Image (tube, rainbow, N blue to C red; front, side, top):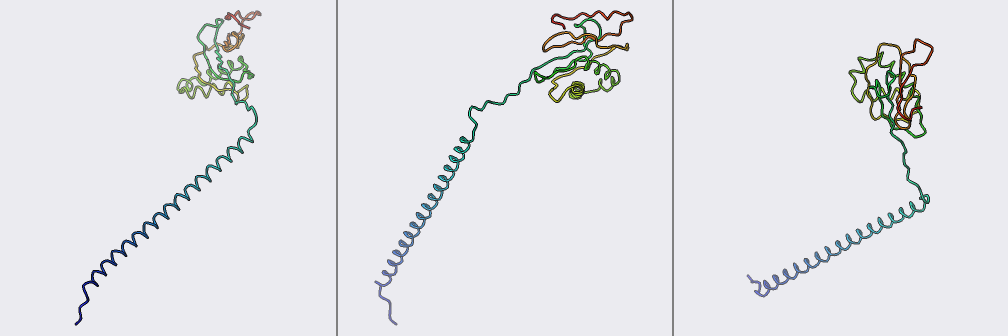
Length: 200
């Protein structure tokens, strides 16, 4: 039996160590190559996104109309009150606050007449109505004579007398309007009504 020389064992160990170092070096080079590839791809994606955003911004700016004015919805708050009797300061049986286009108009006398007939026929239902339901009823009363240019913000209903009555005078001017509703006069002269300053 022949034994392998000792220097051969040392030689195998040295070659094994060198082989491991070479493999580690190859792995390190491979990792660096993959890292560089990932960085390159990321940079390419970022550059593409930036250039695309810049192009989109340029296109949007080129199609933007010059000196484009902002769109503003102009509306004003108004109030309409319907009062039974001859005094505009008496409690109202119907009051509505609403926003409207300045060009929009409401037939105040017709709204008050409709509100009075609605109260006469639907008193129990109105008494049980929530604020949202009252706003819906007021919206219906306003839009009976007008287009869709009104937004009701608040509405309230009071009580009416059993006597028949008709709107006889519109008081107030501008944002606040009061319609006086009185029973027809037995005589030939029209009912006497008291309006506030600025009545028409």
